[in-house]
Image (cartoon, rainbow, N blue to C red; front, side):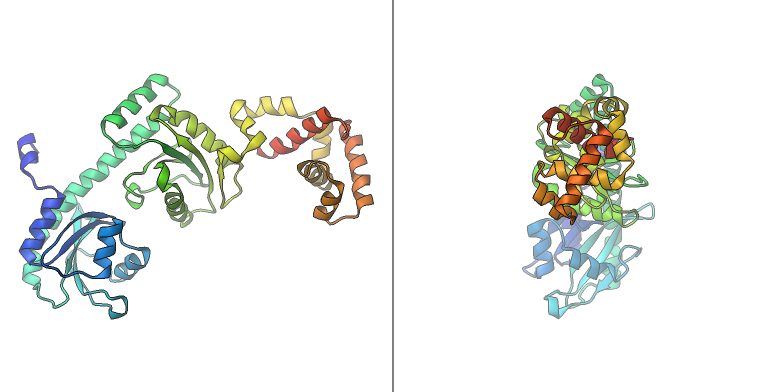
Length: 369
């Protein structure tokens, strides 16, 4: 399309207004994740579903599930949704916005009295096709932004700088951000249409990397985790926040992936909570192993019960009573185990430096490859 033609082409808001005028009904355009794209009034007819979509910029999960049961995701033509009096929902007409056999969104028209005939609805389908084309272009642009996010994670500073400049020029991100890393057994990319528009995402070194406006972190992580866990085992997630500028994303990603690496499956860890585990960011695994492990600690690690005893004892700051209670053993049994730990490691648990050496070895070793 030439620039002049593009300038004259209607945008999504104009398409919705044209549809409302053509079909003489209130119209709402949502993407396929039920995020509000545009709306146009026609008269004063409204119901709670339409009101929520406009006020909160998206429909609820319950509404989405209710409407999708009518097959709208696969429909190639108009679909009538009956009223649901229990929910205060008026009947409506759904026109899928499709392009190249892919559904990119839905044009909704309130039609409780079934005043829109099939012939009238068919006349609006070219508008929906146009909307589908525009939304397909937007999806491609989001894919391009994903490549720019990957460039922010490059080892080459000049590539990162260019990507930060390009994303700033495109007004694609609004710092401060949360950098999130989600780890799954298989890293098929998240569909960006299934996440809020303000979230940028890519896959880099088998990490799902998300750049999230700080205020939206919790809801977005919950949504992303649910999407990934539909096809994978429980997700390990790590976050670094706040990330003040796009230039800081690379370091934020490195920290968030350490947090994800240490998170139990199904949980999220924040970089700020890692304590000594932050050392995983400062050096490679081999260097950390050589620094923190000794022949004695390696011998200890071969004994599961003594390893658990030593870790619990040190985590509880050497409190014998609490350690025995936590391990559900007699205090004399604990004293016996502690002596065996000292014999195996050649470290004195009454010596601060020796305790530090042992505690670091026990803390880091489970996360070293």
